[in-house]
Length: 368
Image 1 (cartoon, rainbow, N blue to C red):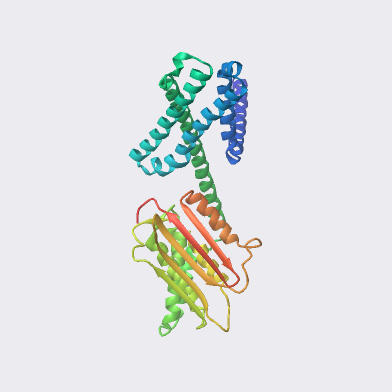
Image 2 (tube, helix red, strand yellow):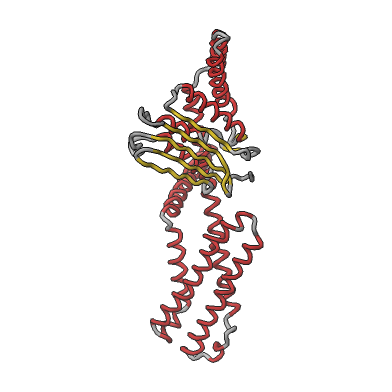
């Protein structure tokens, strides 16, 4: 008897798991191709046409179609003004007073236009005397617009919650995969640092440049191994890491190369995802030109913009960089930005035969 219950429970949970996977697949498909919007409006227009079938019988097809267009067109304006403009720009940024005003105004506009249309259609076209009053359908029109607005906002917030949960799962999965690949590739850190210390003391004290270079290299490894495990890290540490990397690369270059690294004094007291900038800096050194008749340049600048933080990387190049056949580092960096800063980053890449530049803007949760 117990075996039979366990078997039935296993079958139930397997079926539930399969059903959930199918639901998630359908939701992903709908969201990807915006079919949820189409489905919503098809049902809305169909239901509205069904309850207004009397208008088709008494007023004719032109007035019936006009009713569908005006009513649902006005609803669409109210709904999308809120979903695409008011909620992202005001409610999401805690500007509730402005958001409420910008929500109420389209609602009142809908009621006013729909009242006027109803008065004309039913009061004068269909000759219903009591509906020649402008305010006759105010309560009904107000309740309709509030219902659809509330319903659409609820669907929108549910969709955003679902997308956020999916994004969190993707970030966690990406982090696990990265950690797994890193664990497979890394050398025992204790052995590594002991070896570096041994080499450091074997270098003659008079060779200060070599000692300083090895010390920078050790700091970079320590940062990658021990300090980049969290989701965010102080910007000061990330800046130190970038400076060490630039200085190590500068050692290999002669006088025909110029490397500039600048950072505004205001770049401090906030956190950022670790190693989010280094792929763009590495790319500049990897693809820098090797002119013999003119200067080869790399310029790196970290500063502020109106909403957060900005990174600018510029390098001269000789061969146009083919991102279609390469650029795995850049593609991975783009993917990581999409996961860590969804809707809060702007990446601009400019290419020419003799230069390559990247501008990254991040909107940070903490103000600069």
